[in-house]
Amino acid sequence: MEQKKVLGISFGRKMSNTDVMVKTALMECEKAGYKVKFLRGDDLDIKPCTGCISCVVGMTTGRGKGGCPLKDDFHILDEALMECDAVIVGCPTYVLSPTGKFKIVCDRIGPSHDITFRKATYDEGIAAGKSPDTLPDPRSFKKRVGALISVGGAMTKNWLAFMLPTMYEFTMSMGIDVVDMHEYHGAMGYEHVLGNDKQMERMRLMGQNVASALQADTEEERVRWRGEQQGVCPVCHCNMLTVSEDGSSVECPVCGIRGTASMEDGKLKVAFSEAEQKRSRLHWDGKLEHSTEIKTRAVSPGQIPDLAERKKPYIGYAEQDW
Ligand SMILES: Cc1cc2nc3c(=O)[nH]c(=O)nc-3n(C[C@H](O)[C@H](O)[C@H](O)COP(=O)(O)O)c2cc1C
Image 1: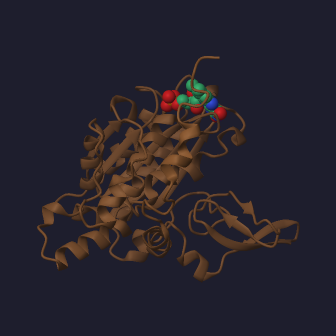
Image 2 (image 1 turned 135 degrees about the horizontal axis):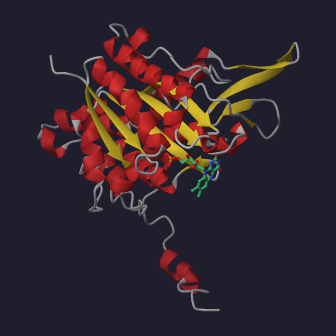
């Protein structure tokens, strides 16, 4: 059997904390017998998504395979992602959230790699007798696991507030099952993570956790949560909630699922039903719900017959110098 592959990607500075943390986890995977590869987000010339949505339109019309017309280094990351069986993603905190480059990469992965769009296009194409090389890459449907590493310089954890929830944007559309995540806050209290034994040990454990998920012989064991934080959401294990307008329910903003909150013995308890957990956007059903709403409800050009006329007053408006 072909040796499984683990991809590590860091959005940090060269050879700084995040690079070394991702590489430490990779080293454990290599020790466990897996092939490893490391990429640095900032070494890749990846352009921002222009919003043309030709990736999705191509798939929904059966004419495309989820590709992007932009010409840059994205294909290097894409090929590594398609080839890997596990991915370990590390990112520094820039103003409470992951870096701009991280977000650019997530947008480029986003809808174009959504497994529900890709699978429908693939299956319909095969049924119609199309050549597989005109269809989405079948490696997109490989079961993969992931691990997320958030790094922040601040001593106070809430200065990394949006990190882990946002980092799910990397794995979400590809349906990669995150089995571990870790947040290192207070990085500026050390010259380098190499001087922080506790963090280095945690990264070795992350590598072992990813390796153990790859070794699993049941689906339950493969996706078993290995992170230290159980979190308020039983699906993504994050600790973030939003409150519904009428205040009657809460929502996990990562999964998009509703739960009910109550206080028990002075502690906040949040319950998410099995049905809601199943429709998390980290799972197939939640993604399908979304791709179906786009396919069935997004309108084609022509709905507003005089749109060009209506746009006229806005063309170039206030775009001159002060
Ligand atoms: C523009 C910018 C904004 C930052 N904002 C935050 C922040 O909001 N919270 C935080 O914990 N650290 C923040 N930091 C610190 C970085 O997260 C920290 O230096 C981290 O170690 C960088 O990762 P690296 O060493 O792998 O490059 C910021 C750094 C920069 C450059």
